[in-house]
Image 1 (cartoon, rainbow, N blue to C red):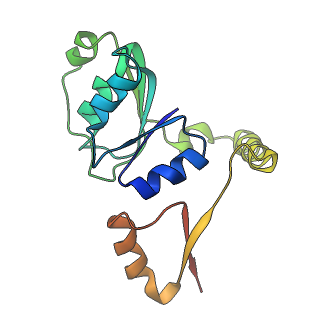
Image 2: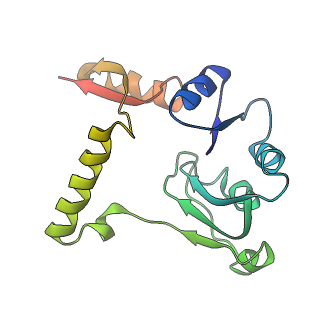
Length: 158
């Protein structure tokens, strides 16, 4: 698992959360870091929560027949692109999943919920609440999120 973070402090956090390798984006372009760490081969899967600003670079990190999972728009939505690019870069796959499509039936929602809580209860995934804000300070919480000052989960309290 290769994680990409914005600061050395977040690199330490990523390692404690299970990343085998961490690239600090402010010190090295993530595409170069992935190529360095994989001996130029690229990775099988990229999970991209950022969107517009990282989409092209995420594709460049994939090995042939790799899969990119785009699940966020932190930097804005991904602009339209030419599908031919996927074949040119090695017969790549791109998906944009949303939970609503995986939980249209009540039984599916319950099964996925049970699976999530089982994984959390096992300790394989840790939910860390690293900051809380009074609800009246929701605007500050949003500013801190946008400024990348937060880690883990953020909770607004009544």
